[in-house]
Length: 105
Image (tube, rainbow, N blue to C red; front, side, top):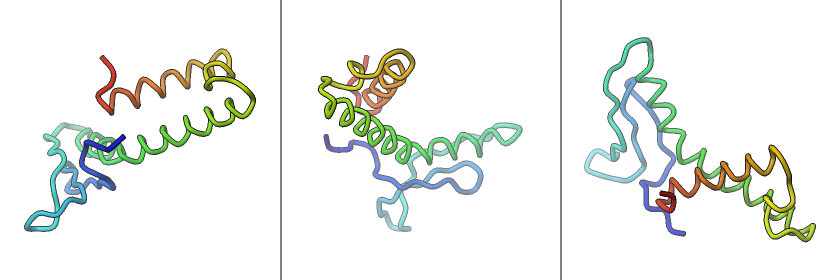
């Protein structure tokens, strides 16, 4: 599936703006401008948003490994192979990825 968001990597700077890698006249495209919040919350929010492309890639990779391992052992997917908390974790990862891709309600 083609990515619909601004491609990463993203970085936070000035304690509150997040920048992507798309070129404009100054070489950057803003993804988000975080409004000032007390106690360092703006910087923490900016870091979280900046990490989003990397976190998505990590989730997709982890789920792919889990599904490949399960398939190699004859299961349909990781939910069929892993039980209990591992199956619940894989389901949570699927939901998170679907939300990012606009596939979840």
